[in-house]
Length: 477
Image (cartoon, rainbow, N blue to C red):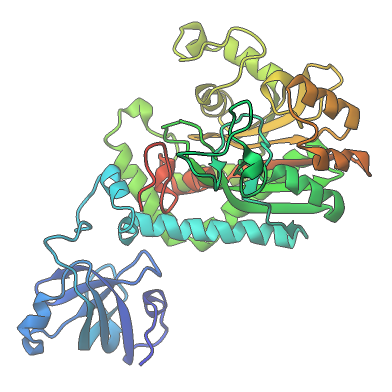
């Protein structure tokens, strides 16, 4: 008999039918009641075993983590909290699980313990819910751009260019580490390397994406990106996924409109499709916050926070206005900020971004027109000569979730900016070609997918929203 997913069994319209369910044992009580989960839903289905007519040897093998197959009759449940259960006629152990050694016992585990068992943590309720939400969010991303007529572009993972100009990249080489070929000056001779030049793992697909936007009109990328940044924080990963749309003929205002509409769409889509998982994650967050001092607890529940983003327009504030607010804020005056804001031109830190969102405006905020010297070379210079047409979207609990800009479409201005920053024109000759041949106003942004998942699930550490986190000192699994 073909097996049916637990999710479908629990939604079934007819009972007294023979069914086959397969999954993993979450708990086994009184030698009679199995809580079975197959990953299709947060909910388990109860399977009732006739223990008097089941061999003792089989009963002993029904342990937490064991994979089993049951055939029986789907009936209305007499127990509280479940609509249906399976009266088991036949039970088969597909894979044993040693109860003494299986780490995911049915009790509360610390998140740190679960990270050390990332290969098994997805068998817990919380991580099953997080990964289902992540999957639906991912689908929503593609759905949104597909509906808007964007073209999906796969940009290179191995690249010779540094899109951000920050230099925090992982080198890719096929040269021997112990004795690489060297130039007469003693430098590593990358001309003898696999690609004949120095290459790295990409930090962004933006520059390549721009070239496609200048032919296809509107494109997006959604793929892995890498930063060799030694940031051991709850917000940073060395390997993460990035969503990057680029749109020809869009200015900064169009870019802000697109980003706001996109975020609201994917959150609404996920709210509609993942109600059970999000309710579970909301309850989990409430339980977690009970242990925190009142002042550190969220003012809104998870679902309230998600609906808040859907129901409110994002507040648009210039960087200059934001600096004035921060300079005059109580935490700045009382030196409560770790990084004190003293003058215009300061690079905003997460604590400043969160203050603006959570304390001052109490809504998502879009900051725009940043100082040119703290932003990337490709952002369009404003008429004042000191700010660029950049924008960041700030979210409660997260800080920056989106970074974008109107791109510098003027060839001469772009070349001047590259010279000032020591960026090699020959290295980016192909990028400059888009300004030589049919240049036009265009804009785009990047959204770190894991930060979006972090916000939607209510988790507080980015390592808990990606299957196998890559962080400084950790490439386990």
